[in-house]
Amino acid sequence: MVARTASRTRNLARPDALLRGEETGDGPTVLLLHAGGERRQVWTPVIDVLTAAGYRCVAYDQRGHGDSDGSRHALAPFAADAAAMLAEEAPGCVVVGASLGGLAALAALADPAVRAKVDGLVLVDVVPDPDADRVRAFLASGAVLGDFGPLVEDTLAQAPRLREITAGLDVPILLVRAGVGSSITADEADRLVRLAPHATATSILDAGHLIARDQPVKLAETIATAAAEWRALALLRELGAGSVDHPGGNLLDHLQRVRDLVREWGGSRRLQFVALCHAAYGTDGFPHALLPLDERDRLQAAIGDEAESLVYLYDACDRTKTYARLGETPLPLTDRFTGEVVPLDATDLNDFVVLTVANELDVARKASLAPETRRDLRALVSALAAYAPEAAAQALADPSL
Image (tube, rainbow, N blue to C red):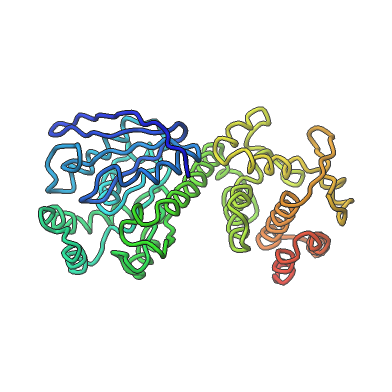
């Protein structure tokens, strides 16, 4: 059982309402906006997991719900409330919106000042433009329509504007879709991914529309993973990774492609973070450092100590001395920054090798290399196969090698 963290009361005065809520935990902020007909307590088990993972959670009863007063007949006031909530926070928030909460968040993000506060948006079983007749039937079947009729009709009428906002967003979006009880179709989820420049989708199959009630731990873990990745991406952009030349575009493009390869090969959550940030301190083969070593705490805050420690080892690797020992277990890694020899064994060794293979494969795919250089890369991957045979086999089968 996750230990409960004490919460602190939050009150937000609006021109026509007083919104009551609470904040829990310390760390990067996650703002949670509940669905219509719910109240903030629906997030409690999600908050328990997120605060244990090092996040600070803020959740209000939306207007006309729970302990908050105010009219709930149109979407615009909900959007203005979400903007006001974010105005109270420092930049770097992740916003999680379920159903009505997600649409309010989307509408609020039309304002550049609001977008500047947000690292990413999680939409929980909602898209900006659902089929109106099916939404009405879905809500009626759950006896939810009732007093929410005017709000539902106003929100459905906003679909063209919400689509326009979504298409113009420069923040990442994750759609978390429910299973059989989802209020949206697979086609609608695919349409959102095509519409939004930085959207992805996932599913929690054993949950209905109210995922926070049905599968709070899985939802929280999904949010935590997305939040950490978005914080890392925000840091990489801040550090200028997008303006550093690299084969295939820029360094940020390369980092994301390597992350995608590692994910495709079934790499752990930790390894995906390492792949995304693997050149933070520069490497023996690409010496451009985004972060000086005396600022390692910034990367630790974004992806966690365990992932950052492997980023450091990957970047510190003296390749000439370390690769000369390939085949040994543990692998003696020579730290080019300190001269120390660090034994890599078990998980660290496997992850180090999978990352190395993915990195070299992306370089082979994107760079103009001399034939002898490609032969050298193939020989390196072949030598690494003893530690990570499946990843090496995938790379060696690629035409670029």
